[in-house]
Image 1 (cartoon, rainbow, N blue to C red):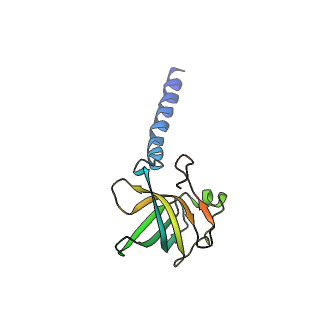
Image 2: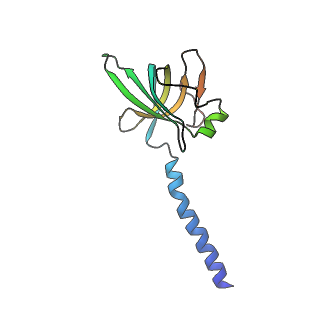
Image 3: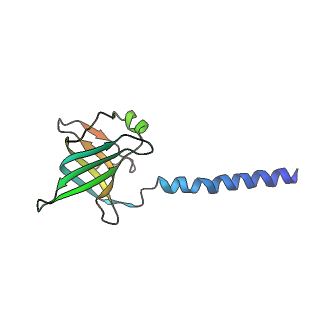
Length: 134
C-alpha cells in the first residue's frame, strides 16, 4: 500500500516535470509585446501552413528603401482555421500589412498578431492576451 502511494506520487511528479518544457515552448517571453510592429506593403515570399506553427515570410522596404526579410510565427493550422484562415489565405507575391511583436533580440522575427490582405480582409491570430495591435 505504501509503495503504491509513493509510486503514484512519483509518477505525478515525473509527469509535471515533463510538462514544463511544453509551457516554455508556448511562451511569448522572447517577443517584446510592449512594442508592436506594423509592416505595411509587405510582400509575401513564403507561407508555411504546417504544424506545429504556421509561418509567413515577407519582404518589406525600410525607410531608406532597403529590403528587409521578416518571418512571423502564427498559431497552428487548426487554430487558424477556427479564425477563418486557410492554406489559400495568402500566396507568394501577395502584398499585405502585417502586425506582429518583434523578437526582443532585434532580429526581424516576430509573433504574428494579425494580417490585412490587399482586399481589406483582416485575418487575426491575436494570441497575446487577446489584444490586437492598432
